Each structure stands twice: as structure tokens, then as C-alpha cells.
Image (cartoon, rainbow, N blue to C red; front, side, top):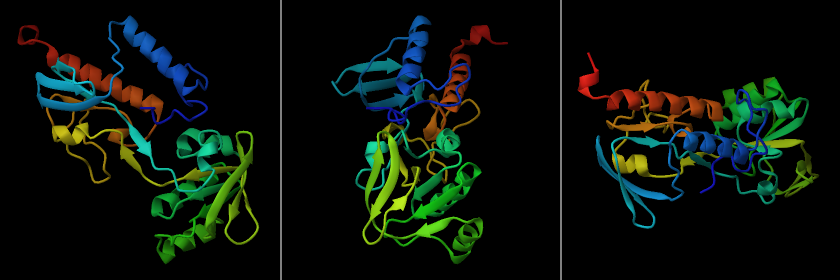
Length: 267
């Protein structure tokens, strides 16, 4: 399955690398890991069972592998709003992550597609960079209190409730959105907040606990509530950035290494 950032034109904020493509960043990381002794197996894992020191991993072709420790790093899938044409510009001028792509809309007119409190907060957050921000509910009643709408109005965020019928643009750039009744809405970029879901159910298979936001609970060493199972990246919470996912992986690796030391090497 494709990684979450596959459609992005670049990965931002990774120290030492200036905006590599997701493919290039993964190539470099795989190369470094293999050079350090790792083995890459490109198969989909369908089931993990067992307990600390005795896990069993099964892939889609029925092959089984044993492992003493597990790291879950399968990421999230973003739900794309059902607006025709939106996917054409996804990753180049349609985004979901303001921390990644907010700076790219400096001085722009930006639309945010969504109806929730999270979408409203996204619209407000994007005012850090954008000159104008619109919250587009796509013919759906916004799930916002009167107080929340008042905050948006006070901040200058325009609330538009028309049905969005088609996203248009030139090359990789969005230019406008057709609506069901009226002139098009002109925008330079779009963000959306339609929710996410885990890319796999392996954490559920193993019995890992989740926090109130739906992320896998981990300790300081990235170990979940199931001993011997660690997790890293977006499935453990914000921020959803490649650099913080890598840092999670480092913490998990160090914790696992220490846990595997024999008693004869401890005092």
C-alpha cells in the first residue's frame, strides 16, 4: 500500500534534506537501514499474534516469521472529501497537513473543506500564512456552536455552505471550485479535514489500547500497552511529520535494544 505522503510533492522540515520527494526520502532511509544490516521484505502483513519474545507474523501469501519484538509503523489513511476533481490536485495544491504545507500558501486565498470543530481550527490556523481563508461545508450543516461561528466571523474566516460540484485548475494548481448555484469560488489552494483511519488493524489484533483521540497509547520508549509491541509515527498522535515519525522510531529502537540485553549484561 502507498504511504500516506505518497501524493505529496515533497517532504518538508527533514534536517539535512531540502524538500526531497517521499519516494527519494524512503529510498535513502531503506538504503541506510539495509547498509546497517536490516532485511527489507515487501509483503503485506495480515496477522500478528503471540506475546513478548514469541510473536508470529503472517503475510498475505501465508508465510510466517517469528519475532521477539514488534514495531507498528503502518501509518494512517486520509479520508478525501467527495468533491469531484479534488484528487487531481492532491499533494500539489490540495493538502491535509498545515504543519507540512501551510508555509506554501503564504499570501494566498485558501479554502478549507470540512464541517467540524477540527476543520474550523484548521481554517483559523492557516491564517498564519494565508491572506484569506474560507471554510467550505459542501452543502452539509457545520457541526459548530454559535460561539465557534462567532470566532470564525470575528477572525475574518468566510463560511460558505454551497454544494461543491467540481475543482478546477491549471497544471498542478487549483484555481476555482464550481458550486451548484452561483459563480465559482476562487481559491489558490485547498485543505481538508475529513478524518483518518489506520492503515491496518494489527494493533487491534494484538489488543493495544488507544487514547481518547483514537491514537495508540505508548510510553516514553514507544511501547504500547502490550509488552513487546512498540508503535511509531502518525498512529501514535501529533505532530504528523516525517521527522517526528523518524524520532519515534529511534526511541522504539533504543527501548527494544535495551529490553533484549541478557541479564548477564545488566548490573
